[in-house]
Amino acid sequence: MNFTCETCIKLENAETAIRKAFGSLQPHCCAQTRSGHDYAFDFCSAKAVVRADSHILWIRIEAEEFIIAVGAKILIQSEIAIHSKDVPENWLWIEATDDPFAAITSFEGQEGSRAAGGSSVTPE
Image (tube, rainbow, N blue to C red):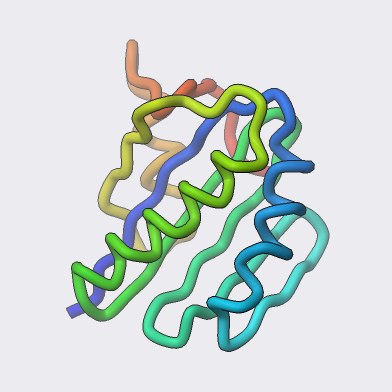
């Protein structure tokens, strides 16, 4: 069974935070790639994509086991927090669909719904 979740967070220095976290997370990864605003992490037993968009980070994590997904979330959150100026204290993760960032985009579009420090924009 796959566990896939998504979140988005609003950060003043989103691009800088993920760029620095990308370097810091390298020792924990089997592989890393960057394409435009997408930062991809392969933690061997989990995969993550972080998309930097203006002052927002869109984050998606996939793992075969729940506990591995939780570990990947904690690892990414802690590294982003280290390099952020205004990281939210609580991050809302929601169950994702097969379409990357569709679930969090749909959630963000609901009246009064916001993820951590949320915004009503969609990922580019």
